Image (cartoon, rainbow, N blue to C red; front, side, top):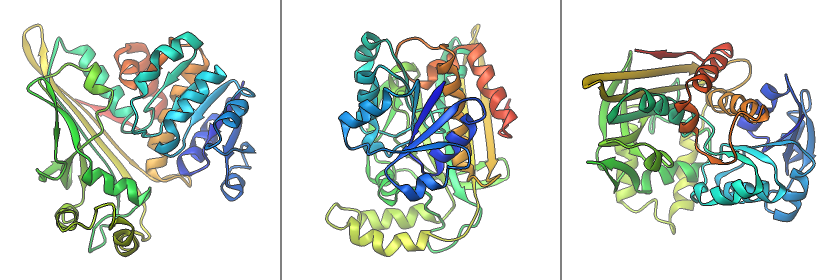
Length: 354
């Protein structure tokens, strides 16, 4: 089977590396420099994701597609896979609602797994398992962070992804479930301290629930993103002073982005918590993950790409139905959940439960 990985960034490179053990892998990107970095374990092909028709034609040459492109290309990638009638596993954080394409995917008889990375992705899978085990879910909290080991002042954060996407986390309204209803909240309205294991963080409410808003019934459900103490208050001041307004953001990032670019290994941390009932009795379930950079891959690339690669294997085996499938559905299937967790463990990513 020939697999095309779209995008040769840190995550796309790690996906291709993992899949190359079992498939003939091709990596598509418009940058020859990025493609050169994967030639030791994958074939390469120049692809311009902004050319829809050429993207469709390229997809038709392969059996399975894995999308690791920036979010702005995500929805078009889904449409292209449907038109090409090729299965797709995608990790891009697209602004559009991918579930709008569910009927089109079913008619084309293709399987598309969306949000198949770390968070959203693995976070959904873990919450889906909790939801399936409980008779009723009263509260669900996802806490997640990708952080530098060294918290360097003045902003105590290292950028490993798009600076514009980072700032959008602080300006875009976050959707949560409160009292059983979907509501929008200011992400920085409530900055709280939290201790997880031996770590002390600050957290804010982030807009990462996405498909969970429609597929999980709960009284209260939210995602909170973790930062080192001292970061969020400074970010909030900059936002309130207008530095993140569209007309100012380019200038602002020229000033602050270099302050968040320095040498430090990263780590990934996630806690997924659910509280509800089983047979009328109160029950709490916790999942916890901690991972560090290894074997030339950042931790965030590992937890994102390995999750996607494992899901891609499931799709290659025809283990999923046609349509657009959110990752929480995978977590609700006990056998699929167990396989994902076990395969992550084989790659050195252990998930604790208590």
